Amino acid sequence: MKKLIVLFLLVGLCGATVFAQGSSPSQNSGDSRFRISIGGGGLFSGNFSSWSVEKDAAESNLYRYNSTNMNVAPYFILDFKFLELNIGLLLGQVNGDSTMSGNNNFPAQTLGLRGSAYLKLPFALSPMFSLFPLLGADYDLQLIARKSNDYDATFPINGNSNAKPIDALNNLWFKAGLGLDTFFNDHLFLRTELLYGVRLQNEMEKYLLDIRDDVNGMLGHGGDFKIAIGYRF
Image (tube, rainbow, N blue to C red; front, side, top):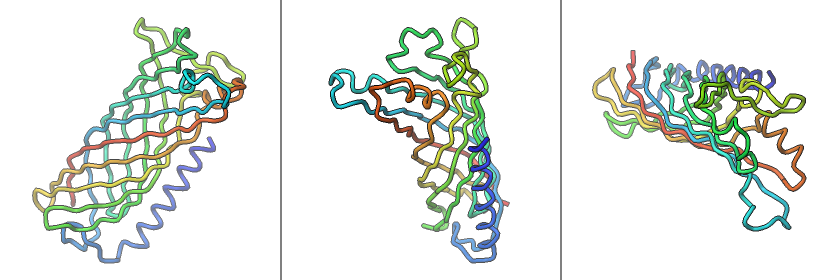
């Protein structure tokens, strides 16, 4: 709940910035007007956990806690020139670290939702191309995790060794990156984006940090490649 509140506050801040800047001229493919765009496409997303262990741990085991979650997703864009909002599905697989190799719940296929809010500042490179830096946040809400033999996977968190993915795997991200719009005419464009960032620990990771004496900490990090077709009004 606290993570959701943080994300909503960020969206509100982004919205305030947009309306404060809406009357200012900006270059977006040579157009200084404030224009709204919609669109849709797909993304490829990588989610990694890098764990650090005590110095006296065996060298061969230094990375034994690393885990991954890879996703592909269709998503929808709502763009207010200085603010981009995304919502989409997350279809992926979560892989437990090697200490969980005996856990029958890993790897598991996952289904979730992602909401995103990014501040952006477009610069016209030419009448056809517009480049923009991005800074913002994602929230991943994991709804379902299922094994190939068709049973629901569960995960350990504090106070519950069989928690559902919505209680154990949700992530709040902070990301930055670059985007490029390629305009085919005054309305239709192709958008590509590349982002990378860090995230807060999810509930399962907090639990694993608590129970492992030889762990110093962990860093959640990952990136996205997005491509979409948009329409500018």
